[in-house]
Image 1 (cartoon, rainbow, N blue to C red):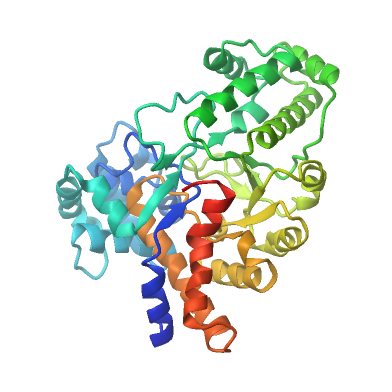
Image 2: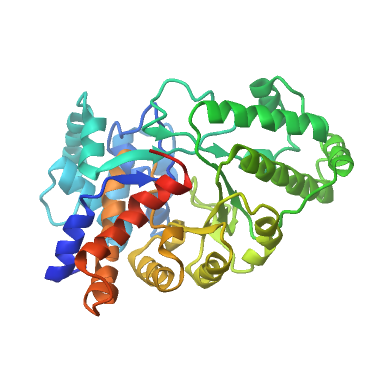
Length: 426
């Protein structure tokens, strides 16, 4: 993206805003990459290389990391038109000193050597956070995560609840829940008690949100306690009872919403993903969006829990207008980032521009990284910051709607202050 002077100036100032990243998959015990394999193992690169002709053999666990890196770099010339390639190029140039025109298999040993040297520095985590200007990063924590051994002020816990809602029928999930809470959730009363203990644990560890990714077919609704107990009782013996599964999922979800209300936690909803569409895909490269989903499926939820804030992510840019309309009308619905398949500059620009034209500015969380390693914070946020600078220049400053100072105040809301308020972080 070629930026004019005004846009460059806005971008430079936007980069000075300390960030709060409200959704990531960072491991707080190993937040930064240890080698180049941790970077190119990100599912975007394995998906794109596989889609462009690479077999899955280089991804086998028994292969050495360097062989895996060489194979992906060897296919990179087939997808060097993508924004994900630009992320990697920025990482290689900014952190690893790469000065070539395009990384290739011939560069793999030199890049791996540089990564081992740079990433092995004792203060590397601090360097990356400072360079990216990120102060706090929200995590994605399993419900049975002990949440020990890391700074919960920097790496903020978030209770991820997919397993509780969609796999409560599985013995392994119930065993994990029983081990984490000391309660065997065999009926609705015990389930409610167990979920309460999870919330107590997470809140005591500075958790600031509950989150879940949701398939297009799901629609939450309350389930009477007796009916939920009956479903929970059937499922261990009747794994093919799909009606009981669906009802129990709706019931567990509703209980989670009740505890979000009682504990004053926002409930992040990430809506529209179909799992394992491409069954022969690489790890994490099997899931796709489905346009049959609608936020109308959640209207009763939004009406029933006016005290709960629902930051909403949609998987497809096509659904952005519906998200805008719900955030326009419902006080408790907030637009949240640009998720997954919508996380490319063209969709971000269109979607962010439409949100800024229609949704109150205090109800928008501009971006989150969704990153697995800290090194991706810089290129991903820079992509968003460049796009935001262009929108602010073209739509606000040049027409005289905002001064440059007011435009930067808006950027600060989107990148920091709205997240501080919505998630009650300092």
